[in-house]
Length: 490
Image (cartoon, rainbow, N blue to C red; front, side):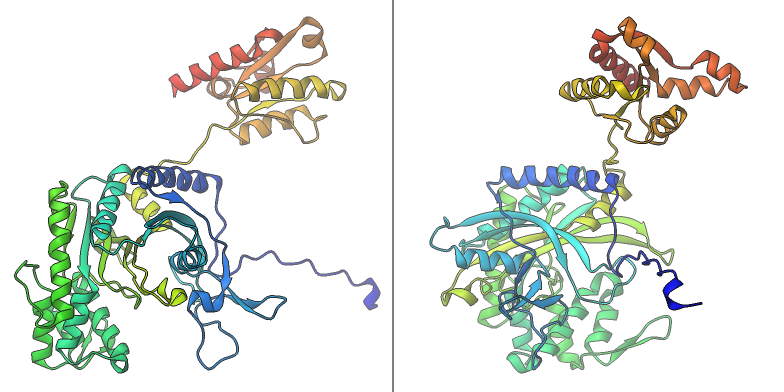
């Protein structure tokens, strides 16, 4: 066979790894959830802003050292000016750029919220995607910890606005200064110990899952889990481990780390606790928890995490608490990178997909389903304008409606389409009905119920289950009446 006659290969449709398509129900459910969150943010005086998905890579502050291609963990490309641009990996770094660029025009403190997709160029896995949505709120230009306390109160209010009852969530609060003070106390200060400090923090972060003994092993020589997998330890001495263990125990106003950084952090936590208690938020909602760790290096003060405490079954069949659905903290150095002067900031980020999963587990997620549109069927090609007039009249009355757009000459296909679309009503008008000023309404829901009792096709066609005639002039009123009856019967 000659190459000329060879059929071209069809392009294979394939979804990129780590990305997902979203259904109408999922989109509507997410929008309904975010509307409730936005309502709380607005009540606290925050305003929406939007930043682009792309930023110059150096503004994001993430790049691959000693390489011409800055693609470590981010998706990057060059624009027509040969400048590196990257898809944002969070919503905080773009906010910092926005504030710095518009610093002379905005009013400080600058209180804003943003929702949008972020992107991570990392290996995808179960529940781990390269594109996901975050919903952030931030205050820039407020140096006092009252701004941090308010963030915690706002997140507690968000949980309850979504129907998560007290006892099923807690906002845990700690202070990075306390953790830094502990690191300094065990000799892990300075840039040269940055990696070791992060390993200590990662070990502390596993306290809920592994318990005190498991964390002690990770801080020391290492740990072997039940499957035989070995995790190397940080290599701290027994005395150093005891210092860490004492610092992440129960919080007390009298706690002292023994150095300025740590004790400043304790004082800030005391202030936050006083503010939240006096505002009516008890420990069942917001709790000072010295074991709360946020991994990002840019946190400089209070850190907080929204944790859901109700049990779920994981992929191994084990019952565990649901865990974190968002977190944040104070990041006084992020905006300052652009300004050459201190610019205090604090914020909180919600993982939208994870929070939706939590609400689904609690039975609190709105289904996202919307009433399917009514279908105006087409019986006569010369009457398209009339059919479209009916559709527009229904839409103008606030009713979802569409006119059949397929091959109208095969009428049974139109009713099959309406059935598959879950259309509640089909509107039918042939030439005889039009001449008489009449319209046939077919109640698709009642029709299905009646059809179940009809044994033959002949009987079905004769009975026209769920179908009745109305005056053309009464279309909107009769449709509204039927929809109300359908809603009451469901």
